[in-house]
Image 1 (tube, one colour):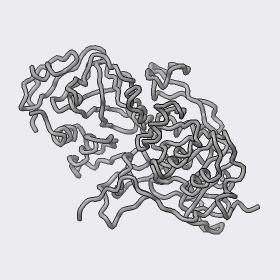
Image 2 (spheres, each protein chain N blue to C red; image 1 turned 135 degrees about the horizontal axis):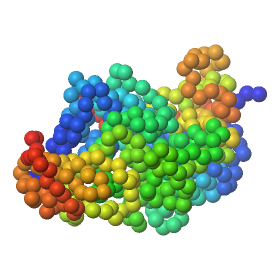
Image 3 (cartoon, rainbow over the protein chains, first blue to last red; image 1 turned 45 degrees about the vertical axis):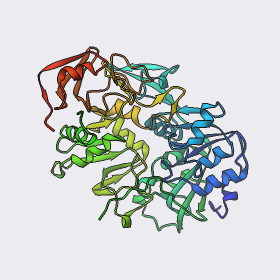
Image 4 (cartoon, each protein chain N blue to C red; image 1 turned 90 degrees about the vertical axis):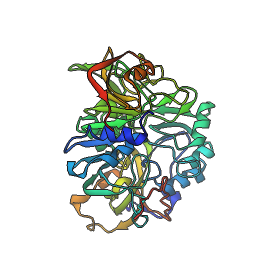
Length: 231
Length: 219
């Protein structure tokens, strides 16, 4: 059975209201932009989205905030999104702030069958309130839970038809952990290559984690802060 | 005159030793990179998954897949590596980053820092700051000495939501260089040359001891 699908609609088949969706990306870098548009167009509502950021107002996850399809976000930083701040402060949107490293590790743990772990990050802050604290050696650690999702939406550079993935530069970010933590992991890629073309030594995500592969119909790869130096 | 942002950055760059791996936060900390001598062989870490951060790209080099934690387009130096966010924070939390420099809204004499939230007002999130202050081997704060209303940011006890407890080693502000004597007070090591040490103490909202051998900063 081929994992390759030929439309965004097929890629997202089975996404329903109130599901938890895990998304790769850091800012707008390495986001599954076509799958996010597809989520919006599907009209599903009440989503819990786990993503480091929330896009900008009119691109990335910001699109789903505009249409109020997101009930809850789990993120480390949402400062680039004015709609987000407004919806949160008015109480329309639920938000769980998760320190960035804790978010990465919670996804890694979720995908690796680890229900919870202890980290020093956030001890003594409001992030640790109500959570179990343990002392190891002379230091305190807070227990954090692994995260899994109904769907994981991943952006990679190349996939082979088994779903082995290679990412490019800093667009890797959260994508490898997200890929492991979805019941159904959908990846959009710039290029699908035949089996054998990717060097097994250079694969970042083994294909076992991937259920569906879509070649991006088009990619904008929008840049958030275009910064250059003069020659 | 207090120090300029560039002078704060230049002073902090002197804390960086040969072979260090350093994570620089957004704002004044970013400027520190401009003053690190190439001869030190320092590798800059960007928590979105790059060790070996280079200068901003030429127009012709811009690559949307290559950004820093401030979402700016950047380049990678020779010897750089790319990795996932989990690997990035394993590096940070695991104590493999020698130094991090970050901004703050408040720092107190416990060495605690607040820099991610103003309740009911500013909701942006902590990003990687909580992990960085918990994990980096040395944590230096770069900041203005007072907020825009003139309220001191070095305090006896932080009133804003904390980013980390007992984690700050040193603060470099536009007024001077302070060590945190955790649980007790701040120790003034150097002051901005146009100010007096007494003026710096007066402008600080916490107990400050003027260190033996304290001096005007050489900037």
